[in-house]
Length: 339
Image (tube, rainbow, N blue to C red; front, side, top):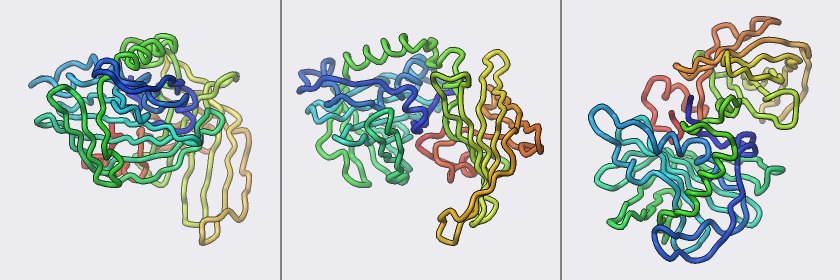
């Protein structure tokens, strides 16, 4: 199953857990947990992928050196920062997620980099802001062009050099045994399988997608709890600067067939002015039905629409940044979230 990378509002609200406790670190194995009781993206990302990354098979020509450092870390000075390191399928690839709870919001950084000579170097890193609670999970993109590095010291600590805004000034991250145990316990409670996936859950496919055959079309799969449906799916197509078409539907996920069946799809046409403000909204229909079929090997989703065959030729690929879809499809992007 795919490793979920994106912490969208819906995915974050579904899987984030509370972090508690504070205080100064005493050693690399007992570093302080993040300050304040907050829903942390770092722990959420760990719930989704840490086990899979930690048990990844070695590449045919050698093991990724980051495997020696996979896991959760916290700022040893007790400033409230937490960090997750994950391996990728690339021999030297690294995912790094850093979170920090403010009084009324939550900041996090996600970046993809490579490791060489105990230095992780990254570019196109992203910084994001989330609301502090599940009831207020709105996400703001602060930037997606961050760059910098992490130096791994002889005692397995990491010093962050952030070239974008010097966010890592004075931060040294140390291994946090308690936080790693908490992550493992929460994964078990959540019913995750040994490879880091949620068994039989649409959460394995939650997040944003771009149509790899039409980059004017995007899709978002958002899990729903306490309902007779498993998720809400919204597809958006920009046909011109002043016209956007949306399809919104409720879906039921079937693990055995890797498909999502939907009904009650609402199609709308939204007219915008030259400044991007909505001028009018027209409902085209409200009774659409169809299916999304997941190709687990290719990590793509195809859309079959029974009303007007709107999904003909669609092939949605999971994307962190929609604007990087074309580059990633061509294999040229170093986007922080690329799978």
